[in-house]
Image 1 (cartoon, rainbow, N blue to C red):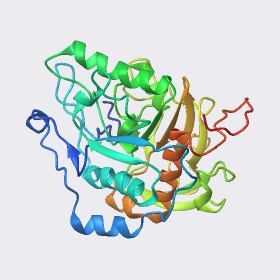
Image 2: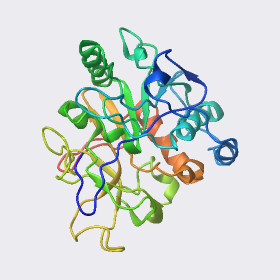
Image 3: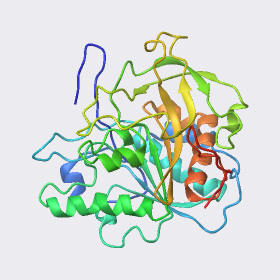
Image 4: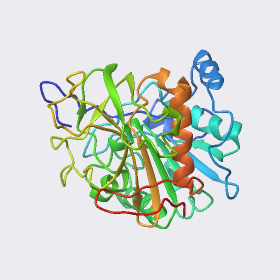
Length: 319
């Protein structure tokens, strides 16, 4: 990871509640998997009342939150304390609204063979480093990430939250799928003025066509990161939903593109990314939860949204 005077390249954490656990997983990553009951209560009181759009079919989602174990090439991924709550929130949103049914897991063997076949989308909650790796079997590790890439390219969905972009720096296609690689951040509660880049999008409808002020650990996607093939993020390759007015609070140099959330196509599939989610309170913010629901419904193909990139024109569609 790159460390500069200002930026710290942290890796992210993992998952959940109501989980499918591999017997060896906890031996590698002693992660807290049960969210704080008081936090859950706050989250449950903030859940959306209904789906953004009616599901076209019964949808099944895999919510995954394992961080990469220590390997010969790198250390273990950083574990965010908010991951158990984030995973529980994504599942609870589906349960309450009927938009989808979700399984929570941090067992990487679910990506083996045809394990993903029963799912319509995968949701990654602050997964970091090589989160599907088996330190003792490089071939299996490579096959798992290939299976995820092929899953999305085949026409399925992927939603990534916060540190899902802090992973697989040595697999450029993963960065291309996610839309960018994390390069650093400032404080954990950095003040930003959020720009609503597509106020007409049904995904960002909850914000009423307006920008808003927010505090969280705000990721950068600059060209100073650790990606083997360099930074893959470009505003010309994704459809921006939210970004930062960098001049309002002097977050970056004027003219710097500082994205917060985007959507885009990957192969025949769809991807939604939201960088917010470091702090637990993000996961009991009613507007953010509704925004996340809409993003997940987009990747499931149930919510029509314009995902065209600059220089292209396309009718909003759900495939």
